[in-house]
Every structure is written in structure tokens, then in C-alpha cells.
Length: 366
Image (cartoon, rainbow, N blue to C red; front, side):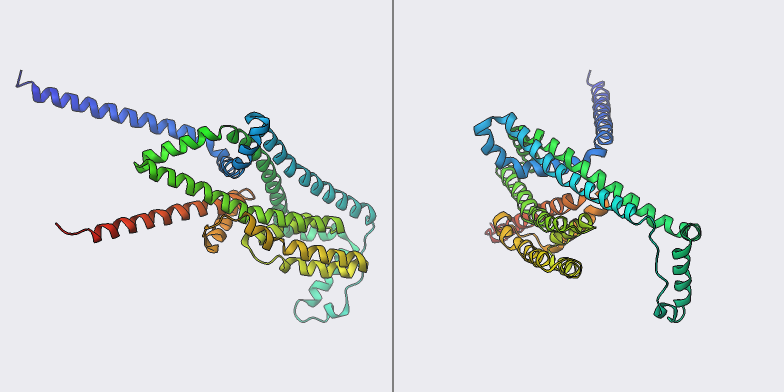
């Protein structure tokens, strides 16, 4: 019996290794297929989770009056409506502007090229010749320069498609966020248990959950939320005054506000254009409105930004740029929040390690 013991132990070890390998293989295969299924929804699910964390305090207040399900349903419906109404208005305004331009200017003709353009050295005569060709024979000009214009036209079409996809993603995100909010208590408990397994400490897990939620709410409300509100205020003035590119200008204001650059960099030239094209009284009202909307972030940011939240501006800027490159319009909002959360968790880990190392150095040597 003793002579068979090493062989039995070896066979048991082989079976144990085989079982572990089979389990790891099946787990890896399951993770792979789950990743393939969830990959198209990664950005939407991340933004939905951010929205759910941000809106959960509101949900807790509402559910005491109307119940858990009705509160989540109301949040999702209002969120989708808030996104859908401006989108419909912007698309309708753009379509009517294009239709009006085409219907009123179907016989549009260019004047002769100015003399100063012809007198420019090197490329002046060539530009004047192109001007005359476009003014006198548009089909010939399109046939000649159509190949050169195909790339910019394709880029514009792709950009418009990404904007439409981004708007649809936002609406789906609010719908998913409503579902996540309805199961918020269970989600918080799951996050706590998961971090407890990772860190091995219930206290540490609770601290990380609190820090993550505070960072998400601080950046989402204090940076992204303020930028959205400010761009909506400025954009409302653009649409009311009837600017032809109000939608794109509003998007540009949103970008400036997220990066936390002064929106006056954009609104000042727009105000000058309005004073040059509109009557004096509407232009003055438009100027006053832009001053109020442009300074609104100074009032909103202290109200919405998380107190004690210190995320450096380069982190938010890199998150903005990387998010746009990776996920388009949706990444404009997801990128800064996710990178800020990663930064805060990393700094928390560094501070913890520093505290542990310091305590070890201060311990007396036995």
C-alpha cells in the first residue's frame, strides 16, 4: 500500500491540475463570449452607470413619495425627454434653414471676382479663374473639383452620423440608468462585496465605494453638468436670435465649457455678428443674455461640484480628448468621469501605501 501512495498522490495532483485548467478555460471562454456580447454597449453601460450614481440621491427622495418603480420610470422619461426635445428642435431648425436657403436661392449667382483677388501673387489668378468657373458653370465646377470635395463631404456625413448615433446612445443611457437606479441598493451592496473581496477589508471596501460615488457625482455634476447647463443657456440664445449654425455653435460651447475655457472666446465673435446683422434692440438683449449665460458657471460650479474633490484639470482634459477619440460624442462625457475616478482611486492607493510604509518605519525594532 505504501508503494502505491506516491503514484496515487501523483494521479490526484494530475487530476487536480486538470480540473483547475478546465475550470480556468471554461471561465475564460465565458468571459470572452460575455465580452463580445457586451462590447457594443460598453460606452452606453458606463454612461448609464455614471448617470445612475449621479441620479440616485434624487431617486431616494422621490421613491418616498411615489415608490421605487415610479421614481425610476419618471427619471428615465424626463431624461429621454430632455434629450429628445432639443434634438428635434435642432434638426427641425437645421432642416428648415437648408430648405429655405435652397428655395430662396435656387437662382443664386456669384458676383465677379474682386480685383484684389486677381492681383494677388502666385495663386491670385488661379483663385479668380475658379471663382469665375463656379459663378458661371456650377456643373463644370463640380465635375472639376468634385473629387477634391469628396473627402470633406464624407467627413461631414460621418460626423453627422456620429452625432445622430451619440444622441441615440444618450437616450438609451437614460433608459438603462432608470433600470439601474431601480436596483440601486442591490448594486451598491454588490460593489461593496466585490471590493471587499479585492481589498480583503470591509472598511477599505466601504471607503472605496464612497470615494468612487463622490468622484462620479462631483465630476459629472460639477464639470459635465455645469457645462451642459451653460451650453443649453447659451444655445437657447443662439436659437432664439435665429443663427444659421446654432446647433454646431452650441456644441462648440459645450466643448469649451467641459474643458473649462471661457465661452466668451466663442460668444464674443457671435455677438459681433449679431450686431452687424440684426437690429440694435435684439442685439443688445442677446448681448445681455450671453453675459448672464457665460457667467452662469461661476454660480453653478460651487453648487454642484463635490466639496473636497481635487481632480487636476489635465486629467479632465485628457479624459475629454481620449473619450472623444475612443467613443465619439458619448466619450465626451464618459472620458473625464472615468479618468477622474481612476485618478482618485490611484491617489487613494498611493496615500494608503505611504501611510503603511510610514507606520512600518516608525515601529520600534525589536
